[in-house]
Length: 240
Ligand code: IPE
Ligand code: IPE
Ligand code: MG
Image (cartoon, rainbow, N blue to C red):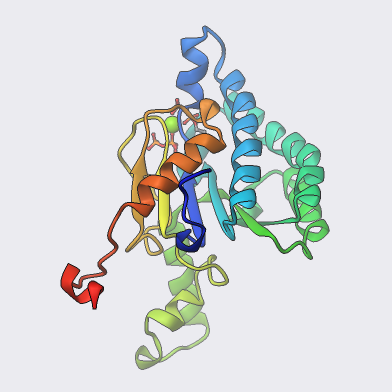
């Protein structure tokens, strides 16, 4: 935590939590064991983010493409989702964290939808940080969905600009992430927040998700703070 400049924190951090299966494999266990231990990493990262002063944390928990995994793994993940939300709502309340979700939530099992909705309502008034779970989410789904709704609303071509388009995205009430983290040594985006990460700083770590803790988050923050975000300008312009 020391060394992190509190005046130069990203408002929003997004994380692609990857590597649960490989983590389990190195321990000779089933993939589910990795997912279960991934919940511990979520708990510590969420608390650590709130503690340092992050306002929005988005976690990629289940992608549209993940529906193509073996049915047994999908079912186990959905069961784990229900129990994790149920158990962790208290953590969210204790830490003044609001829960929200993005993605094609209707695709989730009814039980999971209900649990999620309950936790969202219960934490609605919390103000320290917003935790956004990306569930049954993919960026292409989101963008196509936005385009369909724009057409339904009979918008004119001239009415669509970056600001109005953003209002049709599931992240409309959240600023773009300044920092995107992916664990497990994979260097790809996997259909996550394509519009929103246009100018995000990308941070990749070899750490497998179940081993990720707040210290790893703070390491990423320190790295982020040593970068120069130029947004197309020159260094000289920034120094003026
Ligand atoms: C990330 O871990 C969790 C989900 C995608 C649900 P993986 O399950 O992708 O683990 P690896 O990448 O196979 O190790
Ligand atoms: C990305 O992880 C999705 C989530 C973390 C939920 P995957 O493990 O599904 O990504 P790919 O398929 O290896 O790119
Ligand atoms: Mg993976």
